Length: 223
Image (cartoon, rainbow, N blue to C red; front, side, top):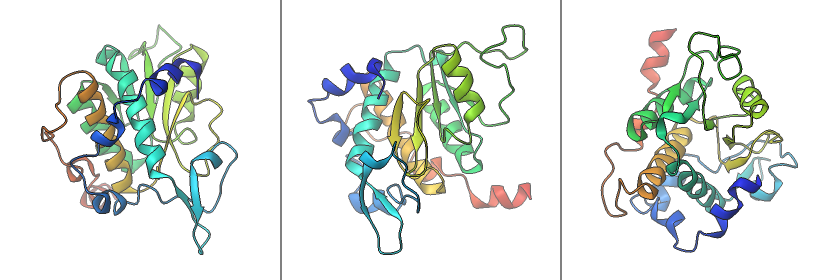
C-alpha cells in the first residue's frame, strides 16, 4: 500500500470498517460472491487470501476487504468529489460506477477511456483528477497508466489474479461478478458518505446493493 494511505489505515480505531456494512447481514454480503477469487493467486494478492477451496478457487478475506474499503472511503471523503474519477471498462461495472457517481458526486466514466484523457490537456474531455478509482487494474490499464504517470493515486478493486504494481490502494474482492461489484461500490459509497458527514451509521442508504447491480436485461438489449 502506498505511503499516502498509511496514516488512513493507522487511524482506523473506531471500527468504522464494520459500520459501513452494518446494514447488510453477513449472509447477504457473502451471497454476492464478494470474496470468491480465481484459480490464480499472484504475489501481490497473497496477503489477502484466507484459504483455497477444494475446487482450486482462492477465497479472499472479506474482513480485509471491508478494512480497505473504509480506508479508501476515508481518503476519498477528504477530496473535492468533482476531482474523483471512477472508471470501469468492465460491463458489469457500468451501473455500480454510475450509481457511485450519483451517490457521492464523483465523476464516472463507463465508456471507452480515450488515451490522453489525463495526460493531454489539449484533448476534448481532458480531466485533471486527484484520485482514480477503477474496477480492475488490468482491464482499466490505460486509465491506471495515465494516472500513475501524473502522480494521481490509484484505488482499485483487485481479484486474486491481479498484479497490483501501479495500484496505490488495493481493495481485495471479486472484480468480475455482477453482484460482487455492486456490493463493493455500494459499501465504498456508504463509507465516503459516512466519512464526509453526509450519512449517519444508522441511516438507511438512498440506494440498495441491488440498485447498484448491472441488470442482465441491459446486457440482452445491447446484444
